Structures are given as C-alpha cells and as structure tokens.
Length: 437
Image 1 (cartoon, one colour):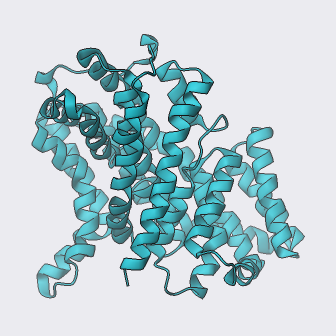
Image 2 (cartoon, helix red, strand yellow):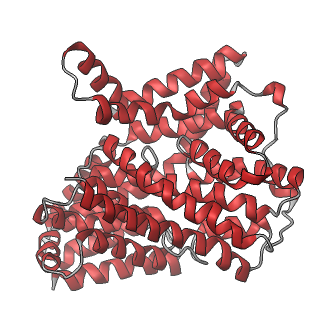
C-alpha cells in the first residue's frame, strides 16, 4: 500500500505540473499533504514535516546556491565567459574547434547556472559559426553538452548540490567524481556526436541574440577569467584531494574547502577582480548580485518542495517500505536511481524535479547497501535526470527557438545529445563503483 500511495503521489505531481501547469512548489506541497493524509498523518504532523523538510534541505543550500548564482552573474556580466571561449577557439583552430567549444562550455558551465549559461553562450556560438563558416549546430552541440553535464553532475549547480544534501554525500567528492564521469560524456555527446550533424543547417533569429559580444579590449584577461570561473572547482575539491594533511595546513584546507566558505571566497574574489578592479562601482555590482538572487529563487522553491515531499515520505514510513521493497531488486541501486530519475524526467520534463524526487525515493536504499558511495548515487540520479529531453522540457524549446530548428530536427540533435550524456554518465558511474573502494 505505501508503494502504491507513493506512485499515485508522483503521478499526481506529474499531472499538476504538466497538465494543470500549476507552480512546481505548490504542486509538491499539495502532493505531500495528500500523501500525509493518505498514510494516516494528522494535520499537525504534516505541518511539522513541511517546516522540517524545508529547513533541512534549504538550511545548508541557500548560501551555496545564492553565491553560485552571484558568481555566475559576475562571470557573465564582466565578459569573463566570452574571454574563455574566444581564447580557446582562437588557440584550437578550425580543425579542433568542437573540442575547444566543449572545453569552453565546461569552464563556463561550472560557475553559471544552465539557463543563464545558455543565453550567454548562444551569441558566442553564433559568432564562431559566422567567422568559421561551420554549421551552428555542429559548433554549438559540444558547448551545450558541457553545460548539460555541469547542470546535472557538478556542484554548485542546484540539482547535484541538493541531491548531495539529501543523500548525505560529500560535495567535494561529488565534484571530483562528477568531472571524471562528465568529461567522457561531454566528449561523446559533444564533439563525437557533432560529427554526424554537419548537414543540419540553422539560421537563428537575431532578435534572440540579446547578449552583446564585447570587444576584446573590454574583456578581462584569460588568466583572471579562468581563475575566477574555476575557483569553486579548486576550492571545493581541495579537501577531497589534499584534506588528509594534518596541522595548520590541513585546517586551512578544510576551511577553504568547506562549501559555504569556498563559495563566499569565490564571490568576494570575483567582486574585486571582475568588478571593483575593472572600474565598476559597488552599487552597480550589488544590483547585479540582487538580480542573480531573483533568478535562483524559483529553483530554491522547487528544492524546498522536494524537501517537504521527502520529509513526509520519511515520517509516514513510506521511505522504509520502498527501501525494503527495492532491496532485493535484481538491478544495482545505481541503475535503479538512474532509471527512476529518467522516468520522472521523461514524464515531467524537469531535470531538477526528477533528480530531487528520485533522491527521496532512493535514500533508504543507500542505508541497506553500504558498499554504494552516496556521491556515485548523486551522479547516477543526475545522469538519469538528463535522459531524453523532449517537448515537455523548457530546454528543448530553448534549443529549438535559438537554433531555429524544426521539432524533428530538435529531437535528432538536442534530445539525442541529452540521452547520450545520460547513458555515458551512468556507464562511467558504474565503472567508478567498481574501481573506488
């Protein structure tokens, strides 16, 4: 019975989000209340679970997600993203242009959240296509595959960060393993897959290319741009790589490698290096950071709603029942997490909703399989949440409109690319599970 109620709850969530078009946060709350009542909880217990669920999941994420959005905004507004891309494409030449686009996409994608990154890189993709004479889809897919991997695999992006919190995974390890799994996924879904797309022609609508491509003299240096964009990666992985050192050096590493401290230090450095040092006033910079927070607020609400759903499942005993039910399943828990996330992604279209919902379902299974690293489960779920993007996903239409493609062409390019990222990501995660002991 608890399993059936959970299934019905997810089905109601899908209907509310996809069919009724209700706000995702409100949908999560309605489904959570319904699940609580159906399992015998009273209204006071449900209300307490709602407060606890939101507090537990957002309490440790607000700083990371907020600072992550701020850093991405500073990197975009300063032209650092443009400098990274322009320098890498200039160095690569036409022969290796797709590999340069993929590398630039990963570097830009680490500090920038997905939609903001997409809007920023599209004029740059267009500029590369015009200057080289190469098809836009051919040069664009490698960069966008890297943005997708960053979105699904790498903290401080919202979904992997929130799933790490839910599954009690180490964010630094998740980032390191995510890079190991993500790079092959980018290579195959990006430059390798792009070779089959040279005949796909597109002429974007210039009205959509609203981000100004800056003159080279306006851009920060490549070294400063890379240092700022990659600072979260360096600091968040510091504890994982060097954290075993004792003494004052070890304490310093643990301090700067703490996710909250790492993101704070990254933002403060960006404010100075990409803002104040280059002549921008503090009020202008603070207005930019305020806009960044407004942009990430809807994502935080989705995460809060997922936290409520997970807490109600836990207090109602649904989690434990599902864990016992799935314990003896003939599939690896990693494959189960990937599959559950993939099914919810296909049904709802939202990678964030898919990942967070799957994490709540799969959490009790981790306690029954101590051999599974929670960081690898984060990546398996993240890979599943990218599976088979289609017409109910905003990213599908974003790609279609910007590249001015038909729906058939968008399925053959964007949807296939996302699926390749998902499948290759899972394969590498399963391989890492064998290697890491």
